[in-house]
Picture 1 (cartoon, rainbow, N blue to C red):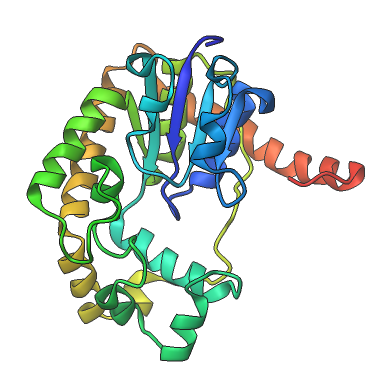
Picture 2: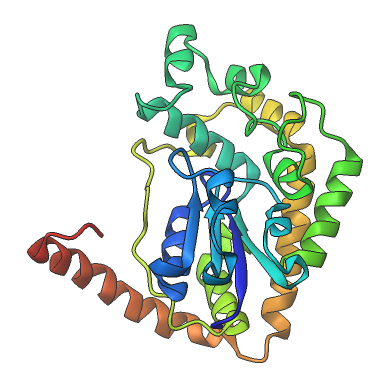
Length: 268
């Protein structure tokens, strides 16, 4: 794994912050670069890529071209049921006053349905297709079936694994086996501040609108889930047999680590 170059495409509200922490721990804090508000792509381009084995951030497919040997760079990502992700994103914005879209939701009293229809950000309509096809700036409600097929092609060619949030532990154990990681124990990061239940709290008209604006993402999610399930089934290790033991140990770690960190003054 020492010479492995990996790009983690972190799609918001998929459980990706937890996975990002797992990946960074595997590669080491001195060998990764995170693109965010403080660190731009231009900053990354100024670095000696020989010392960077991991690139992470909320950006679309395509950044492998900035490495010295693009064909040797692999990708990793995680996706979630598109309806669940979109509702989670809405409540995430609603709960955080520092979010750039928070004031717009509040001032206009936007419902989830209106949040989707108005396309307040590029993640309300076929977010996954946008990220994986590298069409992140496509105008609202303009994603096409051709973009969907390009997204599938890019995943098949460049992403050995696209994890599924609803199969979280299976996903990370498959990643561990493929990439040669140490045990990927974790503590959940960036959990939602507002509790909700889609079946009980979201009306059918809103669900129908979400599906209408995200039908390509739903197709991509179903296709990716089948792909992952096939990978799990054909893996040379019995992942399903490892799940119980992994979860048991991880539960202990999730109890002990916060206590330890509180004692030594470290964030989880």
